[in-house]
Image (cartoon, rainbow, N blue to C red; front, side, top):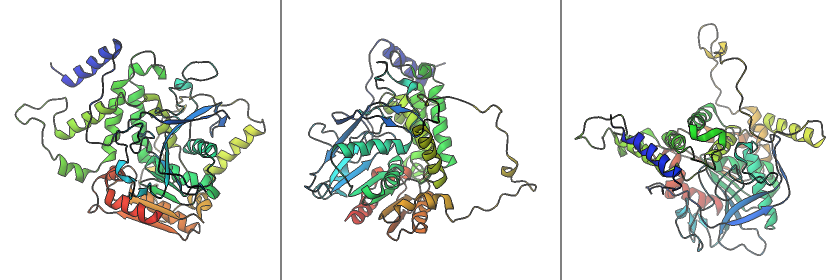
Length: 451
């Protein structure tokens, strides 16, 4: 039997085994690839929320626009999971960036007014320290010896960069998707150093659906035999697992109505009989998305950065627990530190909890539309920070109710300068990817807020 989709994966394995590296094909989606960057080297240890320590680290970054003499016009732009620091073209790297149309003279991030800085997060693979970097302690790549990260750890590393550049206060912190999480975290961690906060298609805490989707991506990647528990750098990377992980992710990035218009039920070649390999146009689109990305991004970075997204929670209880762990280590009352990832399972299998069955014995109480008090308290440091919170009705990964939750939490915390914008399905069918594509509505509201 002929299975060209499997043949292609086996062929790529053989090519990689021979030492060659196939170049991913281009496509209609924004490019996430990097190139020439600036690098900030920090030799002061970075203590992490879950106990690990980076004795030193690099932050790769790029910038656009002139910084004024007071250094008061700086905007820190936070990326999504996949993106590098290359948000816009530069003389050193002229290829278009992932937010190319949103940055430049007269653009929403106006380089005639602002100095924009975008970094690759620590844990990433586009120049910043991550699992693929060399551990200065033993001269070997970290791989899965890399410590568990949080969004807040990534933000602290970014602010080390700002310290190195002599920037005391940001004009604004701006981010979308994972960057929207980081933007809120920046304001909570450093309220006196952030003038404005913009969170687009983000959230104040990760929710079960998005955690579940990232879990499935990590599982298919880790089950690729080439993953080798993270130690694949001298061999064949787990490209098949990466491809499937990206296909799963891509399902969550767009919306059903958009795909109905874009692909419908059309098959790639109606003249041929149905096949078990990609056959419908939507299947070939997902296949292309996976092919394009499977060799562009370090698989271990996907594991660590996506797990940091799962752990994200700006609720007061989680913040206090983190502070307690950090204080215990500072007092020397915690023996050792968690220097690497631990992969554990509960001692007993999952069992359905009585309160979640929905039967007569355990009725589920209606969910309140009011944000939890814990999140309101957690966002209280932002009470005096103007905030733009934007969501998209067609987004299934970070549904619009999550941005409403953030905006309402900020207001309940005492913030009287909250701008909440929700794009209806009539305005955008692009789902989560709207922040990459909709210059008119996303860019227009961003421009107005920053002015």
